[in-house]
Image 1 (cartoon, one colour):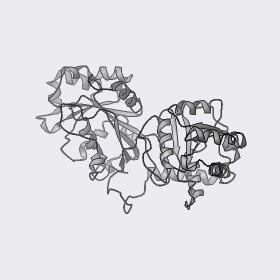
Image 2: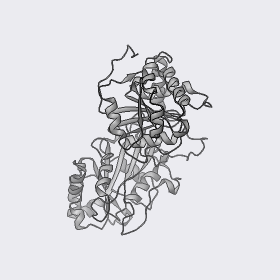
Image 3: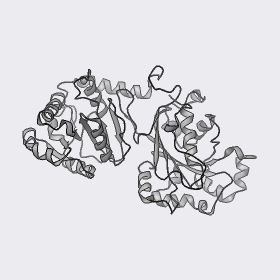
Image 4: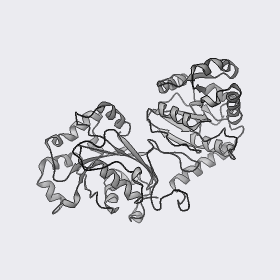
Length: 431
C-alpha cells in the first residue's frame, strides 16, 4: 500500500533499482550489467553500496538474507533511508547455489515481511539459467512476480519492466516513517561530516579513501546520497595525464598504495588505453571521481569510439571539470586544434569547464604570463578556456598546488561546500 503522505512520482528518466540476494558476486555482476560498467561493483561488501549513472541508480544492498546477520532491521531502515521515498524496481538475484524453490520462496517472503506484500508487484527474480527458469515458473502466479535470466540486455529490460508502472513507495507498516526520515537526515549529516578514520582497520591517516570503483561506495552503513563530481583529464600521449591524476590523488592521501594510483611512466607509446577511474570519497565535503583517459586523437589506438562513449558518462556539463593536460615547452601541430577536436568528439563546449594544466611546471623560467605571451597558440587555448591555466609539478608532493588547482574550478565553493580559508593547509584535503 502506498503511503498517504506521498503521491507516486511519474515514470522517471533516472530509474532507481534495489538489488537483493544472497551471493554478493552475482549481485555485483547484475549491477555492472545495469550500469554498463565492469567496475561499478567489485568488492564483496556486507554494507549498502550505491552506483549511479545518468540512467540508473542502483542500491546494492547488504547481506540481508544471511542468517548470521545480527542487524537485519537496521539494514532495512538504512536502505529505506538512502532510497527514500521509494524504488522503481526490486531485483532478487538468485544464484545457482540458492535456486532451490524453498530458498527462493523464503527470500521473497522475507522481502514481503519487511517492505509489504505489494513489493512483489515491483519485483523481478533474476535466475542463473534456463533450468531454474522453467522449474520455478509457477512462482510467477503464486507471488505475482516476474522471472528472468541474466543477460547483456538487462538495462533495457529494466526500463521495459518499469514502463507504465509508478514507483513503489514504502508503507511504513513495519518501520516508522519518522524513524526512516530521521535516519535519512542522520546519514546525510554523517556523509557531510564523516567520522574520523583513526582506529579503523585499513584506513590511511589524513587522507580520503580511494578506490577503483566506477561509482562511489558507501562508508559504513550508508551509501552515496549526493551526486559525485568528476575530474576528467584529457590530452595527448606523453603529456602527463596519469601523473597529474596521481598528484591529485596523493594530495588527499600521501600514503596511497601504488595499486591505488594510475599506471604512469615516461613513454612515447600510450600507457593508458582505456578510461580508468579512482574515487576520492571526501574531498572538501564532496565525493570526487578522477577519470584518466586515453589519447582520443591517436588514430592507432583500438576501441577509441567506445572509450569516448565511456568518457561521456563522466564528462558532462555541470558535473565535471576538464583538465586539458599539455606539457610545458612541448606544443605540437595536433595540439593547436586539440580543444575544438575534443569538443567535437565529446559533443559539447568543454572549454566552459576546462582548466589548461601545464605539466613540468618545475621547468618554467620566469612568470607564466610571460611564457604564454611568447607562445601565442598555447595562449589562444588558455583564452578559450576563460584564462584558466595551472602549472603542475608532478615530482612534488606539495598539496598547495592541488589546492590552487581546485580554486580555479568554476563555482568551486558551491561544488566543495567545506572549502574555506580555514582548510587551506596541507593536512585538510579531507573534510
